[in-house]
Length: 113
Image 1 (cartoon, rainbow, N blue to C red):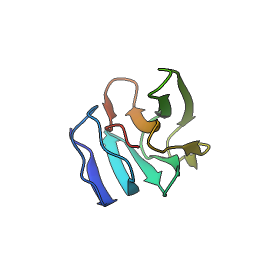
Image 2 (cartoon, one colour):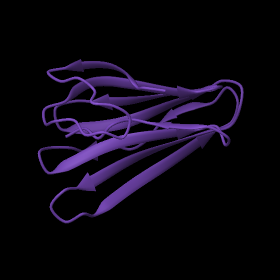
Image 3 (cartoon, rainbow, N blue to C red):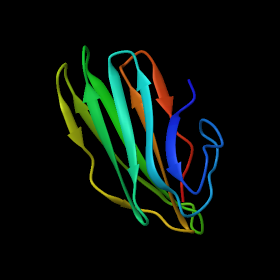
Image 4 (cartoon, rainbow, N blue to C red):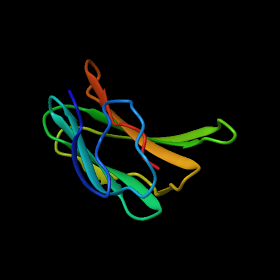
């Protein structure tokens, strides 16, 4: 499943692909019973998870392209739950991406600078 995108100044390259700097807007991805949104402002990003009919996991990743280092945060909610991750910095060096799972299926976004 390709991520649905609503972005200013850039378009999605593809699932697990790479996008360029300056991304703002929102990218939505889903698996059955779960919808996730990667919300991007000029330099900050956070994930939002809506769990409808099953337990869902959403992970936001930050990658440093100079050092290769990566950090992440995972949130999980049962049916009817919803919530946000913390904020992660993105710029020309730091990229962010997001993945969602319902335990049997998963989906992910491209990387956004």
